[in-house]
Length: 235
Image (cartoon, rainbow, N blue to C red; front, side):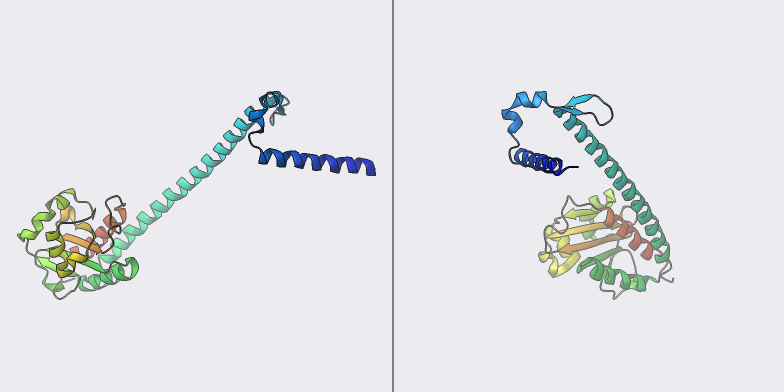
């Protein structure tokens, strides 16, 4: 290549860069010069034919969409695999908890709620006699005919965790004098339709347990606590 050819090539590259820069700073250029846009033709990437600039843009967008769909599909597959692993781990944990003495299980549950989930206001209401758990700070046993349980009938009937605000009488029953500080609650039935009782988590933050939040974690937590407390006290 001669010096003149090299200079001509460099000049052409500089001119192309200038054109590219100008178009980037003037994205409405083709709107003001639509006749130029119509006359532009580009070689088709998969053949020898030429296509318009608009057709080429559509083709690029389709390729990007296909790439994004592929990436999204991969993320979905990974998420499903992770869900399956989490479910197996959950079943494994439930089996382990069934062999832990109830008093020790309560101690572990209380520590876990406080240290792992920042749930500093929690109480487990157990229905019936549970003399072996007397004196446990986290647990309070009430007779099946306790009138306070009537306000939780809809919760037990649904058999699913519920988040949001609660009645004053419910907060007082669950947390005593601290009930007035609870701006939001998570109420979680324990056992089938709350046959064992319920777990209550309270927070001074009204958004901590809001009605729109997912309760999948709370449902799994209920299963773990139920398994740990359902066996015979003599275990």
